[in-house]
Amino acid sequence: MGEKEGRCFRFLYVWQTLIQAPLVAASGAIGFAQYCTYLYPFTPVQQKMVSGSIIILLVFFLYRKIETIGKISVMLWVAVLVTISWMIFGGITSHTISNNWIPDNHSDLFGSLFFFALGQASVKTIYSYLGYYNVCHLGGEIRNPGKNIPRSIFISVFGIAFLYLAMNISVVSVIPWQEAQNSTFIVSTFIERIYGHQAAVIATGLVLIVAFSSLFAVLLGYSRIPYAAAVDGQFFPAFAKLHPTKNFPHISLLFLGGAAFIFSLLFKLSDVISAILAMRILVQFIGQAIGVILLRKRNGTAHLPYKMFLYPLPVILAILIWIFIFVSTGWKFVLSGLTVMSIGVIVYLLMPPFKPESRAGEVR
Image (cartoon, rainbow, N blue to C red; front, top):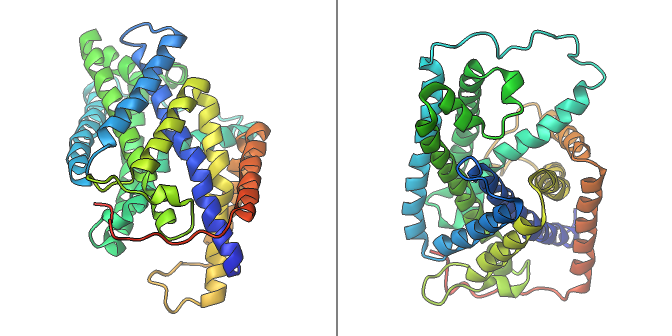
């Protein structure tokens, strides 16, 4: 991959971020509004009002210095751990644990519909894990990023995998999986089944805080991507602007927040989740995997800080899995992903070369 193609790829990465990042925020806001209906029977129109309001509230909280945001993040993180720990503890101590979480019928395993179901489940599962690398977006604001970012990623992946597994086993040990798979408010139903309605109301509030925490981290991280690219001369210069007194990328934050607000009003949750992956996979996942191969081939491996065991098998396997998940999003979303990428290439070719911006005011 030459310098020209590399610059185009960098542009496309940020270009798709302008669309999929607001989609991620919108998906969380839509889910937040839907879960609120456990507390109050909102109509579909009212749910849209709630989801839009959540986006506005997020932008309000993020419209400040990174030091203040760090304190808010810690408080939200505590709420997340309290909620998950409560669920795991409830399942362990409920005295209803049995084998009802294991399906009795194994005849369909690897049957004709197995891979279709696997693809659909993979789309939702990957969506649940997407935040694991969000810390990479904040590299310019992290101390010793060379060590702390990889550590954070490994802790996130293994920690969340453990918590998800423990949480889901706790849920289906109390609620049969046949019932759980159709539940709209699974956490609230789980807590209500063990502790009663009042406890379920509290749990619902905690779930909403968890959802808000996730959106908070997502919008914080993504707002730094167009800024960093613009500063390096890889994207539109307007995104390189910092707030005059608070020193954060306010143009980028406002643009992504505005797009998320519109998406939260226009689309439904299932479509947004599929669209998110379709937008990302070609450039962000498959493209980067191919980039690893080209980079190693061009520059060698002597200067690389990390080794890849069994190279190139992990990269090839990752590409094949991403292609499988990409197709599993559905042809409508496959075409939308291809369209967004194609438009990005056209815009890149038509735009004059970008120039690096002054770094006189760094994000802090």
